[in-house]
Length: 226
Image: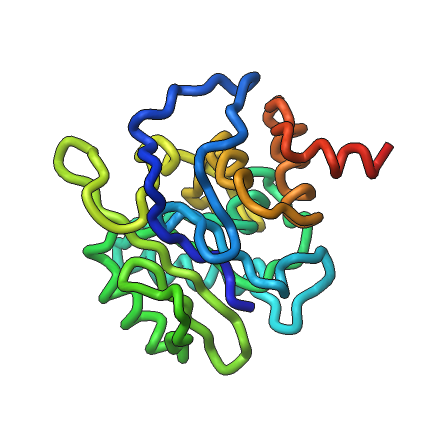
């Protein structure tokens, strides 16, 4: 599983209007395939394009053990991607091939060292850069690391441009409390690129749970279920 990749796009999130839960704007210049958040472009790999179990699964207990290591070392981590969806919902709703995490760039060296001690090594990729890397261990479990930097005023100045307000979600994985991407932003991050059934699964559950309006881009999937 290659995982979700973030690459910086030309659009600026600081210019976006604040959106109420009942009126999410579906398109915010995100792209999947070659990019999505890393200036925010989501490149989800083919093994995550279906709801079937991936060859190497990142299970809930795996996620908890990894997050506990970071917590022990005082590293602030926000879960992103599919595990963020399930953390917000309070239950696992599908298998996950990887774990996406958002961290402050200053913590990246320590995060990578801690993961290296557990057998994770970087997978060379064309879209990798210092703020967006994918690590894998011998069991095939993958961790996508997306790093960012804010200045003292809270403005994004480097790395993956997560809007500061997007790093405000709270959820749980098997009862373990986690920080994650806020639900309204997860929905936004799942628009503006070639969508698949897995995206529909995640966004539909988020919209139903939090009372969001389903982005118009998902109408084709809605039509299939009628």
